[in-house]
Length: 84
Image (cartoon, rainbow, N blue to C red; front, side, top):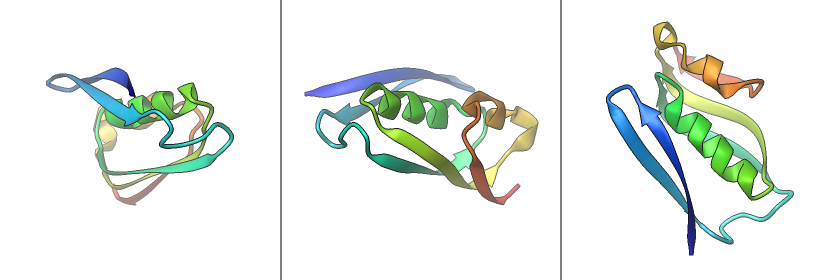
């Protein structure tokens, strides 16, 4: 059984899925991605984990494209970036 979260990309839509039971309510998570552009993937991951009661502590990525304002879609979640 999986749960899914649809999100928008700069060029279309996609769906992220997670196996039910992969994480447990009350756990803490760090989401790591290679790139944050519009923030669609990271914000979908946050929503998916929070739907099952996981507390997302922080997000991290290797590269950020700040001109696309993806950080704004993360709300109050901290974002660690190596290269901007």
